[in-house]
Image (cartoon, rainbow, N blue to C red):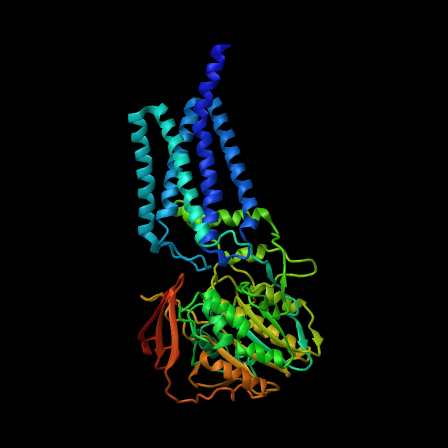
Length: 552
């Protein structure tokens, strides 16, 4: 009896390293990594800590229990099997820890961009080196310390690393106010297809549509020009910023963001105090903001009628956890497995559960196109303003001209899909008799760069801009006037006053003009460089740095 008790005690001691490794793996992958990512990028996600924590905790416990059971089963099958799995698991744990915490500075962005993995050869070499060193070091350790001592090493390393990560996690949480409860604002599609019998003012924004490529498309496909009859096209337009985040608030305010304050404060002020919104309200406009990246900053955001208070509901816990694990895998997985972990972080928006009777607005080209074909336009006597931000030409390139999903599309395919869905939307307005009484601006927030230059995506300064005033009727017009996004605020007012699309800007064709453009690199928004376009909008050789930089 005493011998059996001693044997059980000995077996439990041998099993303990496997249990501790299982707990350490579960903690790193399902608690530390996703929470650290959330705390560091809290404003990028619609959910809060209290939404995700229970899901992650269940996953952590499941991994710990399942791993412990498997180690116990392996020990019953054969001690050598248990030892082999323990060694392999320990090597993977150590290598993954190093991989995910020290080799993440040069990974591609998770914005849907098609990645050429051959450009990341040095990162592959680093990854292989880490895994080889971890394996060799573990083998040497076992050779000199023997297996019993190795068990002690596992029991020491696993809780020690977990403790270090826990301390780091608490630090990141405190510095970013990670436990803040978020108000679950929902951007619904309420009123998207309700149009005024009086006056409509619509800004229809197709993301990342570059005027250089768009002009070429129009020239090569005359039928596309028919889509934009009644509009004036301004190909020589300089935008404000190279990415969506700063571009959108500028469209409504004309106020430059120069890193003099937290961006969130600037953004909140724009949606609260922009004169254009006050003008619309003063003229009795119902306002809808169909902007998928609109964060909750202030109660004044509810001035936009489609924005509702919601709950923290998730449509699929499994898909939520799967997406979290993909993000973790992108950082922690061996290099050649990272490509299978690519995830556009905008995917999380599709997992937000709408309140009863509501549906969340989707900016996807396919969703909008299908909804346009299937949804009837309703009418109201109230004046309507709508800002509709769609995927447009943005990566990933996943559409053909008929707005059908394809595995390997191109930027040009996305542009053709954008024209197709725009055509369907305009035809819907015409058939319902609400086109002529609508001011419509079709534009992009920034251009697109097929080639990444030395300074980053510098060639994104030339977005499209097409303007139609009330009751305009003519073939598509082209104007080579040098336009800047700085001109938009005055243009909005003139359109409200009844001016036509070719009357809203003071700039004239042939005029030489310096136009300001503030450039920053994706994920490095704290460093903005000032440029002035001294020539045509699309000409990067005449886009000259002023030497002024804005750094936070």
